[in-house]
Length: 390
Picture (spheres, rainbow, N blue to C red):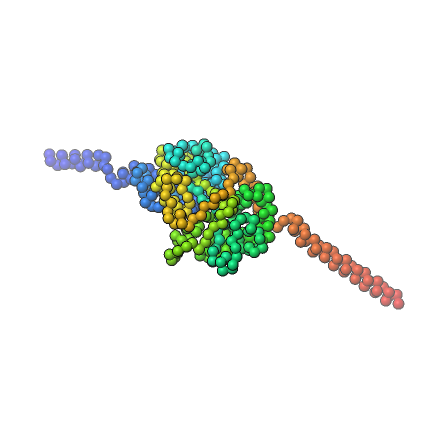
């Protein structure tokens, strides 16, 4: 009888539900955030969200901001993630036109400064901002007794010939931001300005990393150009990542009127998400104080939430322009591609008129040579005929 009871207990135990580590983990929700490759956040900050929401957070880094948006648009019928972070104001209108986001009015939004709320539909909510500026190598200008230019106009002066490296706006978000700064300042005459920059030896590379770490003399690459298109926070980054402690930043930014372009980055809930409630919580988390205070030393951007306290190194070394260049997302959307094409035709491709001017002397010279040969030949034939007659 005892054996029968024991056997019955064993069978009941085997088939009764049990709380095991695997079943506990099965209860975890997973949320995926598609981001650009420059995204970074502290592990403890992510862990705080995971523990508060019994969730696992996965970050899907997918290239630069443009590549991330392209991927999200191409896969919108079968989204790869629940949220997308990293679309900035240069590409925002494209994201909204593609209709990849679901609207969400976060309860944290009232804390955010109105100047960053550029999407009235609340499909894309602001997370951070930064200023694309011209950085310069302090030591170079001091050693060469050269004044630092304070405006876009001054960059075309002969004393700065060949000293400036920029990124291609067709392949780089920083390059596009600087192009937009020139458009905001010069309007339709921006091509004339770029013509002058080209004549003054401006150097163009594909992306920010090459410009900053290879060409720029003020970075680890110690390149040939002492001015580069980068960020107003780059001086703070140089201090933070210096191999030896620094008393001052080795670089600084040119922050005169319209010399910098303000970028704002957004987060949006992707249509088709199966984790809508959790996605809303993560949006709230990204614009709340804890996440906002973590961003400056992770991505060297500014928080949009004014309750977030900036680190001392930002207060001391990061530079913010008093009058950054701005353009509305709608204006950028309507003109971005034509502006990039006009820039490409001006800076990267030889002008047609220039080609005609260069080839004309060669063409004329060739004709003169042919005529000369013909005249010599005729004279030779005539002389030969006279000798035969004699």
